[in-house]
Image (cartoon, rainbow, N blue to C red; front, side, top):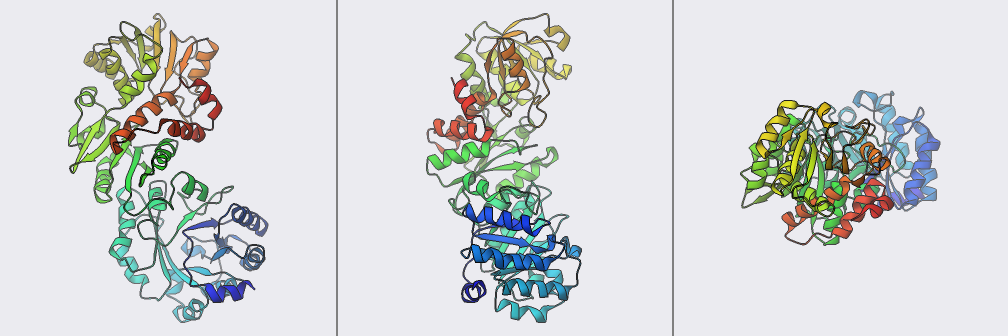
Length: 516
C-alpha cells in the first residue's frame, strides 16, 4: 500500500523540515522514527548506510510506513568514500535505493560522485521517487556556483549543496545560491556551529527544506538541532524572506539564551523578525561585517569577547559607550552601523532598587567590556568604585579612566563593600565550578553578571553567607529589553521575555522567586 501511495504522490512538495536519523541499529532507528512521528513530524531521513546491513533499514521503511502512512521517507545510503558509512559498490548502492523506493520511500539522496558513474540508471528511479543529488564538502565552502553547474549536468528533482562554514561570510555564500538560481530546486546548508544560521534561514530564502536532529539523539551533521528547537525557538515556518535579521555575536555562543528571549519577544509583538546566534571567532569580526552587510542584518547583540574591539568597525558610537570603550548593542540606521551600551542600565536598574548608589562602596571584578560598563555607570551615579581583576595593568588603566581605586586580589580581603559586582566569565557554563572567591565574600550584596547557570558558585556561596544576591538574569533581561526597543521602536514585552529566559535556563521557579 505504501508503494502505491508513493507512486501516486511522490512528486508532491516535500515538507520543510527533515529529521535526519542515523543510528547503528534498526531497533533504534524505528524507535526514533516513531517518536518523531508521534511528535507530529512527517518528513524523516533513514540513513540506512549507518546499519551493518542497509537492507534491514530498507525493510524498516515499509514497517514504519505501515504504521505512519502520513509520513514521507527520504532514503540515503552514502558511501564511505563520500563521508558515509556504506562500503559496497555504486551498483549495490543504487540497488539499495531502488529497494527503498519499493518499500515506500518518496525520495532518495544520491551523492554526485556516485551519480556521475551511473547516470543511465537514474532516470528510472526518478520516475518513482524524488531524486535528490547531493554534494558535501567537509573542508570548507568552495565556489558553489561551479559545483551547481557540475551537478545540473545530471537531471534530478533537487540539488543539495552542503559545505562547511569556517567563517561567517560562508553562510552568505551558501544562502545566496538560492537568490542567484531562483528556479533551481535547491537544498542549501552549511555544517558546523558557524554554519547554524543557514539551517534556520535556508527555507525562508528559497531552499526546499532543512535538516534537524531527532529530539532524543544526535543528528548526522555538525550544527543540527532538533526540529522542536527550530520551530519553537526560531519559528522557521513563521518568518518570511523579508524578515529583519538580528542576532548575537560571541565566542562561545552556544550557551546564549538571547535567541530564545528575543525570538519570543518578536513572536509576542507579531513582528516579522528572526534572531540568531552567530559564532564569531576573535579574528573574524571584519568578515562578520561583510556577511552582515550582504544578508543584510539589521542589528545584533555583542558579548564576550567582542565588546571592545567592535568599536573600530562602527560608523558612529553613542558618547557614553565611547567613553566606556565597550558596545553591546549594534543597529543599522541610514546605512550606517551604530553602537551603544545597554549594559549600563542592566547594572543600574537592578542595583538601584537595593542600594543607594550615591556614596556607596562597590567592588567591580573584571576589566573587560562588561566590567567597564559597570564601573563607568556606578562612578557616574556617585558610587565609590574599586576594581580588581586578573590583569593588573588593565585594572589600573580602567581605574584611572573612571576615577576608581585599583586593587590587587590579595588586597581585597582587607576591604568591605556595600556591593560586589562580578563581571568576568568565571563560573559560566560549561565551567560552572569556577569562582573568584574561595572563602569569605567582602560585601553585603553580591551581583553576578553570569546568568548561565542561574545560580553560580559565587551566588551559592553568597547565599550561604547570608548575602543579598542579584542574578545575572536580572541584568540580562534589563539590557535585552532596551536592545529590543532600540531595534524595533516598540515597548519590550518584558513578561514574555522573562518567561522565555527562565524556560531556556530551566529554572522557572527560581527565577520567579528572585524576580524584583
